[in-house]
Image (cartoon, rainbow, N blue to C red; front, side, top):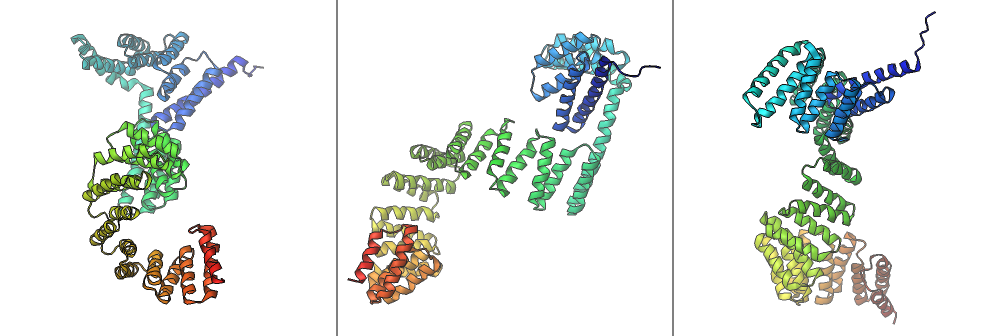
Length: 549
């Protein structure tokens, strides 16, 4: 009876051949589909094949090409793998082709030419590929003006002979047919889906792309199309899932990563860490680094991570120092980190670059606020605010901040004038009237203050501060506590946590003589102030004691 059991050596050989075949299949799929999963599988199987049978030459040069593609080895490393393959099988034509290709990458054209000649001589009638590689090498020499007439003749000879002999190259024809069949299927389903999209038949388009996903090997393409379609239909969750699947199949596709990052940033602001990961992955491509760092800076600010925010904006600004927006954002990050001198420097740079008058006026506003509120350099603040007003005379916010600065200096005349200027620019701005009313009250222009507060309330009845301040004018200015009560109650109704309004309402009832209600509101003030800390507790207690003296 014949013994059908394999010897251990033969068993290893069969296993190695099986692994090599699996690696070839994954390698072919990668060439057709360009999906990272196929590349990883091919590398893994080639490595396993070498472990199973170290004497099988094909695994070495094919593995070298994929590892070089992944950036895991250098060209010299790939050439070493080819040397190993040729030491095992000196007449292996494919090993000579790969060796020649790697030598070309290294710029060693003379040695590459020798390798291609050896490949041609060892291939016989199947020498189409090495001939075409040789023609490409010679064409490079011609383009670089390092050639002779002889090289031109040789180029034409190898190009024509290689083109003619391709008909006998079965592996190339087989691969070409696979490419053709796959490309036709991809084209058909892609065109059908896009046609349905143009007709606004979105469910049919999605079905066409799903069929394409099922019938072809281009999963990354059809997942991307389905993601785009879902995004257009405002199905954000489905869109993210499709793009994630496309990314899994093709992690090196930068376009998909950009979509994942921007969609996540726009629609899922709570998933900041995930968005940061996407942008960090985009950094690996080395493209538009300044823009990526700029987005990362904002994401770190959302996390209140001041150190990383400053670092990201600084990297963006370093890459493009003349970008005003990078300078502005870096300055803002420095403010968050309480590094005000650095913030001033970059705000000044953003203002100098001045890409747009209205935008630059906003930057002037921010810089002026630092001078006024942090540095208490009122002269610099005034100059900066005025520069912003010149750039954008319609920017009411700057005028109000300038007025507030004058109020802080107790320059009431300038404050009143500035608030009135703001009113002339935007007559329906309730805040301008309320601030003007306060300045007029401080100046003892009672009637004018009442008019201003009434106008503020007319524009915005829900502005509790104007309601309270109007009550104060009636209570302390006009001496009409009964009239004031209405406005204090309005303020409390709008904002039940408005401590000062409770206190003022208590004062009004105290003056009227209603001690019970006065005590009730002072007690409310005392209780609420423990939370809001708007007032000195001793002032509230003093009022309560006065009621019972």
